[in-house]
Image 1 (cartoon, helix red, strand yellow):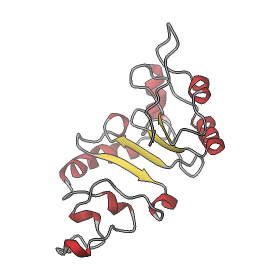
Image 2: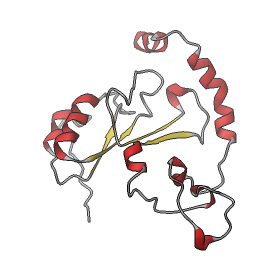
Image 3: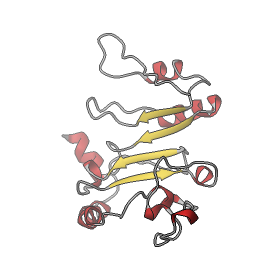
Image 4: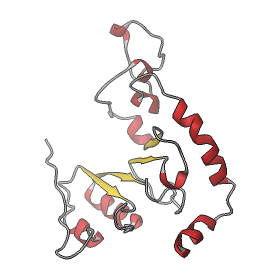
Length: 177
């Protein structure tokens, strides 16, 4: 019952300003999708301000953190969101085919049901009786097929290297470039 609504970019500008996004975001918005850092312009939105606005509208919020994760601080305890997604490519130094997803715990225990189901989306992935299928009570409910572990194994050296860097070093190097 929802309609996709996009916020237009002002004439002569390369990105949507936060204030334009907020002006177009009312209580009719069921889900707002926020791109934290634009891959084309490096424009970073004010996550705290947008999260605060979401609380006034009652909208669910999904944040794509791909372009900022690993180089900018991001903390769900400080600024909570309903959904977070991203790629482990870019600053996380991961391999293609791996990604990350987060669903707020309060949504996992409510009526959030995936659109598709698979063997690994049930509490017992080896339950062959489809008449007795029930979704796992946690994030596993979103596993739709046999997990592909190779991209995650291939990403570990990059993660290890990233985590061995002194805090702020990569950001300082990035800004110097």
